[in-house]
Structure formats: structure tokens, C-alpha cells
Amino acid sequence: MSDSSRGKSTDPPAPAPTGAAAGTAEAEQAAGAPGVIPLVRRFPALASVPRVHLGAFPTPVMRVNGITTRAPLWIKRDDLDAPLCGGNKVRALEYLLAGIAPGDTVLTAGGEGSTHILATATMARALGVRTVAVRWRHDMGPSAEIVAGRARRLCERIYTARGAVTGLAATAVARMFIPARWIPLGGTTPLAMLGHVNAALELAEQVAAGELPLPRYVVLPLGTGGTTAGLALGFAIAGFDTTVVGVRVVPRLVGNARRVHALVRGARDLIERLARTTLPRVPPRGIVIEHRYYGGAYGRVLPAARAAAAELARAAGIPLDDTYSAKAFAAALDLARRDDGPVLFWLTFGVPLPAEAT
Image 1 (cartoon, rainbow, N blue to C red):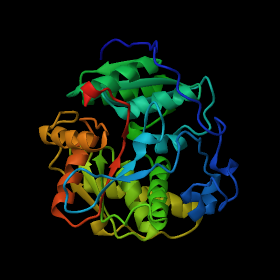
Image 2: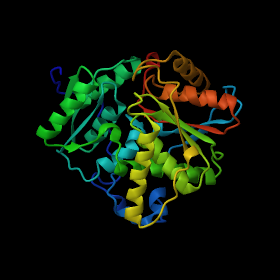
Image 3: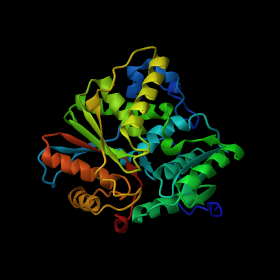
Image 4: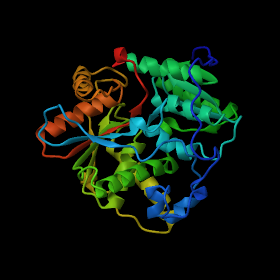
């Protein structure tokens, strides 16, 4: 493991989150009132689960024009949920950072170009909380280098290991000796996945309001799996006949159907226990893991994905990163060109990137 670095950020401070820093869903209005999230409207008992307000929701949806497809192609803009570092991780961190106090420390881990580490450090700083991170080296494209650099400046300390095995070992040691709240890899726990279940119910309300048609497919990157599993469970709760396509961007050991379905069960069990209810099961067709866009290594640039990202940039001016979103968009674009759809691409990457990095 290389020597540690202590961040001296030159980035602008992150904006304070909406609501009280230690706020909870319980502090919101009674279920059914404006401002209550869809998950709590559906299950009022979940208002007692602590949640800090970090993101701006609901995030918008838009139709992609200017790209030839057979099926309508839509985008869910989770990249717009927070200005400095948005994306899907914000939804999970609203639960994982709830109740933490200014001056506290959080510990997390991930690859060197991990957006989870950057999002954790960004949101923690907004709450006056320090971040310590353990990272490990992997293939790095231009966008991953930007993510890594910003995380380095925001973290109180960062330890970088040569590879995933030594990085995970260093993480285990750090958890024993550093007094901090542990934020798991990718922010993937049943509690954190409540944010992604809520995201699916948020989309269901947008469909009901006529903002977009019911998607036949929802396509997104598959990393640690929490977002894919949470969305699939949320769509089952909403009664959607929608297939969630998780486009694997991590080794198969992490990104696989067995793990995703186990995550679904964990989140389902949590909601059933807290809300004292029975939830519908995710059908077999509700989740598909797409392996063809991996590229051979986490973080490795895939030329076909970069070409797809360039099409979206020309058509809509939306930049995508090489590690996650470009690969998932390539899969969504191919699906929209061969199927009748509608296809929704869930944009989970929310780090502003300069043009030269996309």
C-alpha cells in the first residue's frame, strides 16, 4: 500500500444539503403531504427511518432526439440530483449518512476511480464530516482520473493499494483501527437500497403523470448491484412489467444475477419487517445482467461505448464517463435499435466533466 495523502481541497465547498443535517424522514410532513418521498407515501411506517436530505428529487426525464432508434429512447437524469457530485450514490447516502454529526469521520473503500468514494466525500463534507478512504489501482480512463483527483482533494486521508486483494485487506485493517462510521463498498446495503426503491417509485409517479411512457427496459451500469436490485424491487412494488438491465462494469464475481437477487431479498425483507406488509416478488424476467459491454477489466475504456457516448453528446450535449455510464448507454442504444421499447437509460454518473475527458 502506498503512503497516505491528506486532502487539501481547492474545490469549492459543497452546498449544504436541504433540510437539517441530521434530519430524518420522520421530520418531514405526515405521509401524503407535499415533500414526502414516494416510498413513504407508499409505506408510511418508513417515515421513521432516518434520512438526511442531500439530493434534489424527483430528477427529470427526457426523450433522446437526434439519434436513430427503433424504440423510443429516454433518459432518467440522476446526474442532476446534486451539483458537484450527483448520481445514484446520493440516493443511498441519504440513508447511510443520516444522523452523523459535524466533526465525525466516515470510512469507505473502492477502486481508485470510484464515484462512490467521491460522492461519499462530497456529501460528508457538506455535513461537516471527514472522509477516510482505501482505494486500489485499476485501469483508468480520463474521466476516472478526474474522479480520483477530486476524491483525493476532498478526503481527509486516502490509502491506495496496488490491487483489489491488497486493498480489501487494507480496508479490513482500517475498519479495526480507525474510529469511523463504515460506509460499505458502493454504498450497497438493504438500508441504502431504500433510496433506489424510492427512485423506482419516483419514476412510476412520472409515468402516471404522463411525463414518459412505461419503459419496457430500464438500462443502467451494474457495479455493486444496489441500484439495479433496488429499482427492480421498486418496479415490482409499482406493478410495472419492466425489465431492469444491469450492464456489468465490474468483474463477474461481483456483478452477477445471484448477488443481485440476494440484494433484492435483503431490501424486500427490510421493508416487509418495518412496514409489516408483504411485497410482490421480482419475476425472473425483471432483472437481466448484460455482460457484453464489460471491456475485460473494471475501468477499461471500451471503444464501442465511447462511440455511443459521442452520439449522445452530439445529440443532447450530455457527457458520459468511460467506466460506468458510457458502457450502459451503449447497451441501451443497441437495445433501442433492435427492440420496440420504450427503453429508459438511467444516468447514474453525476460528476461534471470537461469536454476533453468525455
